[in-house]
Length: 260
Image (cartoon, rainbow, N blue to C red):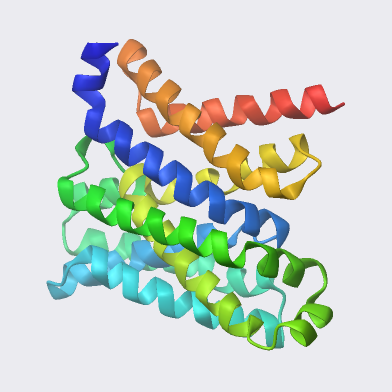
């Protein structure tokens, strides 16, 4: 166990921070039936990172800026005309195609692979700092606005009446969600980051009667999956991100079976 901690210390910390931030935000995503929102933002971030590479900018900050802007745009579109899933569908495939084309034109196949699949084993101290900051923001946001957002989800009209500034809270939620996804992409990649948002939160919500416990149970389950995924990758030499998601999937189906 000591050798495991020494070998994977940075990766373990990065994975757990990703698990906490994405799982907490994922509970809201599940409640609001925004399952594809994380996927869409991750794909936008993928295209934005490619644009950053082409123009010589930081791929992380270009992805961060564009994802925040697109998340706010999606929120506005979905609330005015289309449903959230429909608005998301407009961007999903197009941004993926743009990213692949741009990375290919720039001859950055290594960056392409890193963006698609992530690599928790190669996180840097800067990555850890970003993860620590966003996790702190997510926890702080959850402490102060959890009930307001949940009530907004289930009874929008009444919440608007009681909390006139709820739209501002919702926009802040979209911004934090976008940042969580962008930072999570560095750890588990575009393809798997939505699993970290959806699976632990879904498992928690079907396992518990009181929604408030889901905000604790989901991060716990996701953190356990990180530890087990890293242990399994050490034993069978397989990508840790994929193994983490497999563990999350096993937890979900176990909870679903036990519930029935």
